[in-house]
Each structure stands twice: as structure tokens, then as C-alpha cells.
Length: 300
Image (tube, rainbow, N blue to C red):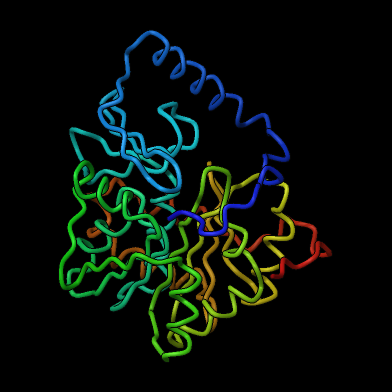
């Protein structure tokens, strides 16, 4: 998913680097060294009206990135030996939303990338309709050619800005059992997909038991305001933190741990092919409010 508005968003830079991230920094430096040594290679560059889409292979992985071949800020990676296995922790975190609603029949994803979530949900939920909104046709082309994404009657792509699609869905009375927000440009989440007004539209298209799942950063200058904005619209939400932060909210009432446990056990077999350990994911479900609750809500 790309941003139709394209204003500068350099204010979304990381606000802090906890000591626990130092190991990841060393790993990144090692990967950069591999690039300089020629151990990784660009296999394709796709022209786009937004920014070039670069596909590279290194370390047994194939990755998509906007703007260049270096690994920082990769949008999608697949394991070439096991394409179903999820490479990124945040995708496993987002899939654990099935602990809240284990059998969604209609899912909306904003932001295709390489199609990791769309493909996984299609396999885990063979009876469900998976709608994906992607603003950049070049991203769809790359996802199909290099990352195994396929469209079909139950796997549909809409070439449109995510907010425009959701606002129209609201007006038309459409409803989804699960909405996943995974839209990033080259800096962060597009600003028009972070506001109270936008999230109210998202909440309105959820079914009574519907679930919102949002991929965000675990450290950014807008972390506090981003959190207060979600809380303003949805009330309490699960705050899963790893390399990224994933917000899981509901239109109705959040399930207790016992219900999460039952649902996790029910979907464990479906999630195992993607490298998802449900016990590990369950431990990430937190209701802790680790932000300044007086931070201003983000608005249009």
C-alpha cells in the first residue's frame, strides 16, 4: 500500500532505541556488509509512479523494498525454501488476531506488499473472502510475479487508496469480520490512515464481532498520540510488541484470556505451516497502556 498524498513524514523517525534492539542493529550491520560484499543481488526493479520497487535475494530470502535494495524497511520477504513460513514477526502477530475471531468469513487488508497476509489467510480460511486494497498497481504486479500471490473469486484486489475504499464501504453498508491495516510508504504509515476520523470509518465497517488489526512501529515520535487515537475510537485494545507493535481491537467486547486460549488451540493446526507458535503469540497479548494517555488525538 502506498500513500496517495505523499507529504513529508520525517517526523515519524524512531524516538528511542532500547538496549534490547542493539542485537538487531548488529544483525543489520552484518547484513549491510553482505550487500557491500556482493552476497546479495537485485533480481528485478519495477517502475512505479510512487517509487521504484526493488526485489532482491540474499541469505535464502527474496525481499521487496520500496526505494532501494538495502534491507532496512523491507516490505515483504519470503523464505525461498519454505514460502509459507513467515519471515517477519509482525505478520505472525497479525495472524494471531484469529485468537480473537477464529473464523472470519470476510476480511479486508489495506496494503498488499508481497501478499504474505492475503495468501496466508486464504490458506488458513479456505471459505473466506479476502479483499485487499492496494494503491500501486506495480506492487500487485511484483507480488504476483515474485511472491506467489494469485487473485481469484475469494482473493480480490482493489486498486485504490485504502481510506477512499473504506469510506465508500461505510457509505454502502459493507461489513467485514476482520480489517487489517498494513499500509506503509517509505517513511511510515500514511498520515491520513492514522486519524480519529479514519478509524471511525474502520470501526463502522466491522461486524458486531469484528476485529481490527493494525501494524505499527514499536518506537516512533507519534507512538503516544497514535495510541490515544486508537483508544479514543475503540477503547481498550491488545498491545502486542515485538520488532513492530500490532494493535488488536474489537467493535464489541475484548475476549478474556480463557477465550483467547480456546481460540488459539482451535486454530493452532491452521497456523503451524506459517511458523506460528500459538503459545508464544499468546504471551504477547497485553492490555498494558505504555503511552502517555494525555497525548493529543490525531485528527484530519
